[in-house]
Length: 260
Image (cartoon, rainbow, N blue to C red; front, side, top):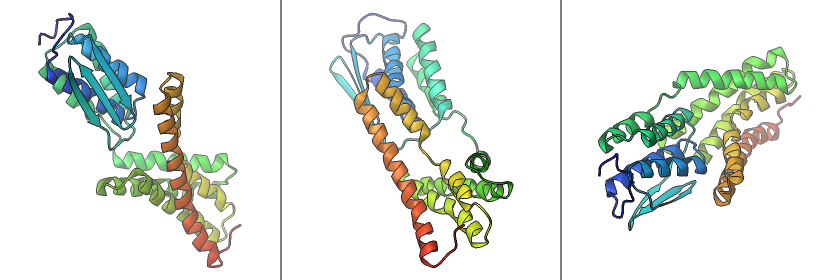
């Protein structure tokens, strides 16, 4: 199909729909909201002459139909990578103004899907600093910063390990919350004041804040099914974090541990 053609495509090239679906799937898997994914896919479709196109996007799947051809993409693994979202979003706008050959679009999409992520060491640093700062916001003292930093860093180590072995996000959140409690338990055992501040600092870096924000944006845009699904996912994540943090605390206190 000629990429410069903007007329109505009665029988669109299936390869065009597949590439458009791949772009939408990459956006959705990287934390893009439903309205953005739909807009990006429709822009790309129009750029390649596919005018009569229907797009349905859900948090775990997307569908694109045109000219009797339907492409479905299942989204099994989701994370947050706003660099991918920004890259594909900008690519769709560039292509809508100046269409490029389909092969080149595939290459640029592949590059966008691998947009730079922070290194694991940087994730540890950021999570640790955030946990240390949060411990102070909830009434902690200077002595609470270091154990909170350790707790925040431990959450990322455990999360990365669970992702490598392919377990569900909820299991990873539960395990990360469990290890985030350990520095607070150590502080309580050694009678360091305010172990609760260390505990809160460690687990707060796990809270699904961006997921809730995306749910609200989907709701504002009228994508109520997606908004409800994301809220449910956030609640399940919060429940997993609470369960993971409660278990070591319960065991410590049941064994007669002191908590100041």
